[in-house]
Image (cartoon, rainbow, N blue to C red; front, side, top):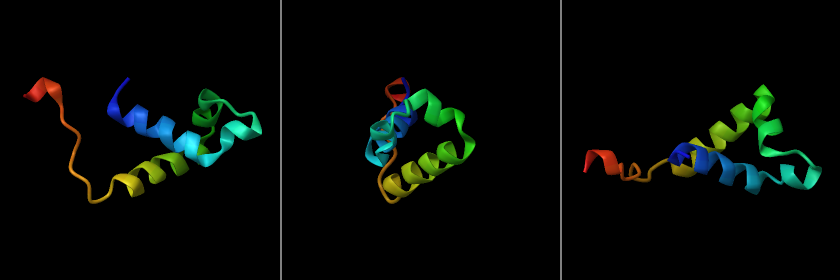
Length: 57
């Protein structure tokens, strides 16, 4: 699992969609929800340094 996928799952958990009975895979299959989660990840990581990539060290 990549860092981006981890952030997407965290955004999904914060959104409360699981309380409505929607799984992560169902949420990602709906385009509008996927885009909203992508924007939530971008907004939460804005101004923070990039994650460390072990392959480049």
